[in-house]
Length: 207
Ligand SMILES: N[C@@H](CCC(=O)N[C@@H](CS)C(=O)NCC(=O)O)C(=O)O
Image (cartoon, rainbow, N blue to C red; front, side):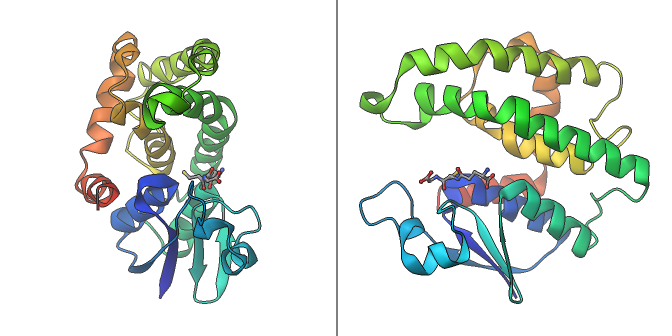
């Protein structure tokens, strides 16, 4: 059976969300981060993921890491209803996946960590402030798209929407006030994180 290594309050929850959207059974192997004795830095885990980060999967002996790549692999292999069935659909999915990973996730994580996730004594406000402008400019690109099509995948909530929403979940979690500048994006994100599979995966984060 598929094994997901990680702690749920991390990008590992994105893999659980995909599994729940796609009816893929899995077992969870807890791995810790950000502690003196974090198991993500232990030799047994580094043998699976030399990058020492979460998540990693073992799919019947096939080991891989990087959350977006894992989710694309699982969705295609297990024939998720989210995965596109045409070349154009796959192209559109990859466009949004790479845009989110390259242009949004890095500044967004800085805003998330230094305004919300880290304990106050570890926050560096300047890092969040500097990242915010570039992040907002890229969120506008999503807002503009959602004024043309109801979903990033086009006419249905598909893999592009899943990957984008699973990353942008952090803005929902921190109740980011500037989301109000992007009404379509805000509405789309709220609908995405309220899907039954999303709610189950988000609930894991508190477990
Ligand atoms: N691009 C990677 C990023 C993985 C990542 O940074 N994971 C965080 C948890 S959400 C982590 O393991 N942090 C611990 C560390 O950096 O030591 C992915 O999407 O899988």
